[in-house]
Length: 273
Image (cartoon, rainbow, N blue to C red):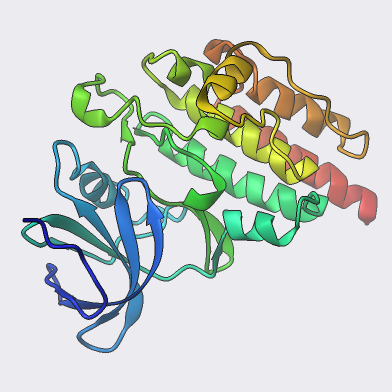
């Protein structure tokens, strides 16, 4: 019988044991708890139930160690039933930031700051890792920058898709057309998800509202993109539209996305000067 993690449990890891506090979230295929290390340091511990392919996030976390665009893994270990990752506690998630807006768009400067950090992260991962589940809940503010988290269904960019990569697991509002078709997802799927996030930040709502998986599938596969407000700069609106093109090959690359967002931000800054 599997043990269900609960506050007070001690989780052995490579460097030191961590004691679980209150549960603060559920991401991908794991539970996230506040936690305290044996030396008194605090952080978050994610526990991932052991199953075929479940150790991918642990392996990818070690692969991406040191990246300034990814929430770092401080320690790793396992129990009889779970893989364990210890991470710093983030200041907030993009999901929480969007919720505080109450359906209103973010200020343009704030939206651009988020999108530039996401684009920098995707450019850094390009050719190495495909995230495949980008969404506001997986983008965390840490030390003043927005970083990617929750690599539970990610895979190495050059890896073939096998049953243990969980390619059919997706988050309906942010999944690309090729993911809905069950096809091999490349970095273009992450660009598409970034386009959905950009639309949401700039308008206060998602471009394709669902609400049920069959609706999402139809909308992502065939529905046209709703227009962005006139207040959104034309070059930014064009970039969002291109990121949400249905054919994966027609979307910008991660490097192009980053360069164009930087150019948009510089043009906006020069107008204010």
